[in-house]
Image (cartoon, rainbow over all chains, first blue to last red; front, side, top):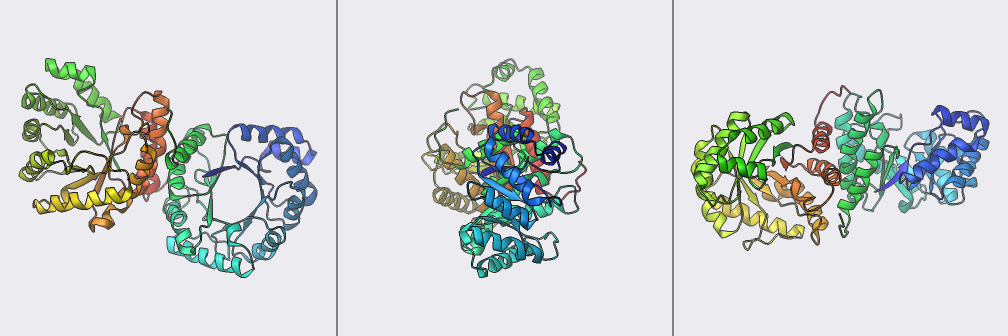
Length: 259
Length: 259
């Protein structure tokens, strides 16, 4: 399990202001702290970027690259911004992402195709509804995989995200139990060792003491790791959760234990 | 997943001395702290009890019962002590335990039969070796289950423990990964919803800072819970691990989340 930092989010006031002013310092500082905390990649979440999207995304990619030599994941629904980010990146980034939603299929798959980039596919209904049951998720995964392959894409470049739901939502816990099963069973279902991702910060989103958010992440991360999750997208500045992630990987690896 | 406290161990100097002097106070104090920490049952581990075993076990059972109204698990290889404990207990305790080792089969199974008690069966070879591979564990589970059923015992009273190995041992991590798979697959293998137990304190036994022991327990407990473990035998005074256990159960249950 690799950890991708979700800390760089344009909705955070400090980051929003830095992007507005094209001031690299606060962004570089955050990225360096994420790298020091153990991030193995950085998700650049710049939202829809209504104003000057290409310019802002290029600025973000260049700034993050200047701060840390880590793989990037580009997280925007704006296709022009995504294209600009792909062009600005030194290494091929991961596109985050698409789903069976028609606009995502139309805009994001061709970019992944053109750049031979890895891309995250979310298990959502075409009308954006989140599935609840395991069978429903598995059905969506089959559809998504079929659409993806029919577009001529390489199955080895797909990363499937079954979408963790906030525990505060009705049926959130039940949905998240299904996420564990889906992560475990997707490679068998699709007949290929497909990679998986899960956005851990969804789990305990909403008003809640920080210590409790982190404790919930600590309980769910090892379950995801043992289910075979490839990428956890997480707040890497939650130190105890990162320690749990590190020890989970260690427990699931062959290693010589030195205390 | 229910938590059984493994804190009451006769090898702890305070407990050894209290048993020697037949002084209930230190034992009652420990049991009350375990109950307050969330223990759902108490394991009375009195070792082989070479001197006056029946009397000491009776004293322990009566003292624990006076301190907390919790189910008991009796943990001794001494059959006379086990019989005395079974006689002294108000509620039918769990017998801990037997395995394919001939002496355990000969001494413990008849006690479980006579008292209609639940009993823990360890996945060990007849010569006491710990199995390493999953297939080896599954083979032992089949043998154990067959021997158990042929003795006329009720499958619903069996609890199988696949024996967590210290991480410090060669192949400890590999063995413990197999433990997860075995816990998950035993009900299918045996064709009955057999209950399982795991002794978490084995994981990080040996010299290691306490914070690291607890962090390792925090990483492994959610994996065991998600695999469907029935009973975790653990040090319930490791507060962060108990919080992780509580939240793991919550994540795996249907519940209304209230923050």
